[in-house]
Length: 454
Image (cartoon, rainbow, N blue to C red):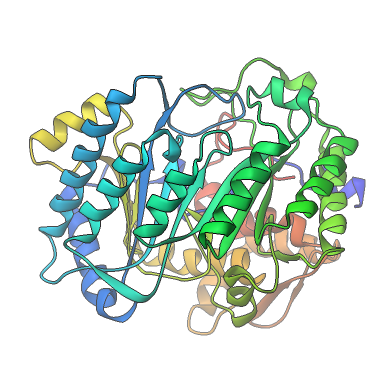
């Protein structure tokens, strides 16, 4: 990896799970009624053709991981499970009232927090409550995030019984020094046990999440973690950069400081080493920071040009409408975004009033929709082209200047109506997308909003 390029392009930038990015949402003109209208429009266009996706946020954790930037509630009181499930099902039924037909569920994901904080019985109750008023798409996919320390055979079996076939375990790093720094102590044996249990029960895709750039993490730590990962051979991997955003309210990122984090060029060396070791056993790089074996649906989707990216990350299938249930969840109608309130107590209060617990959002205008498509193409296929919107592109002199500079650095190739990211440029795809981000160009943030791109 060219260190001068790393230093040049290692700036704060979005991960582009959406466009516009959340800090640039037009919240002043947003309303629940506009959100409902955008979702109904999208649902009527797409439900019978492709179905919808559901993301359910389960925020509870028994302990705080200090690398985590997710919305969570730390508690050991499992009495919180039943009220929360009741509330999520209430929210789902408020959405069902908007539709004239039964929704066809193509994709469902349980995220957190720690979904396996909930008992197997309660997880089954939740999913059955979702499904009783729905139809399953022919090739539906249900997945969940499992904590290797507390995912039991009973958890895996209960979720398998209601249709789950994919699980992703948060590994992060196997080194004890790093684990202590991020307050996530989990021996390799726990991950091995949880992975074997899932395969024994019949899960067809087992994933591991690994993070580089963590506090005190070295090249040798990455090598050790990847070697152990190769022993278990998960079907897919998320191998991504630690997002250091301690300024965001509610983050658990403490117990270490900036001086404990690897330098940018070291982080990139960690990734390149990991990628090299993974390639030795047949892993293919998918999109940004993801890897899969050829037998996994994520690889097949990338090869077929069907890879999609949303607030759940990369997905092997696309739906136009995605509904987020639970505190802080974000929904996407393609024409608009809506985020739920982050306080559990406020979430409960709004649902008791039969009100969707949305507190902010954004309705996309014509320009947003064009840029969104280009950024999504770059993030998923490493290329994008334009025909009818070519005039829009040529009216972006700042973008063209930035892209021409990146072309000189051999990060991309520009044709008359096409941009293609080179292999050398793939680590900088976030930077390339930033050139298209007119909202970011028009209003530079006065303080750091995003993690570093490299």
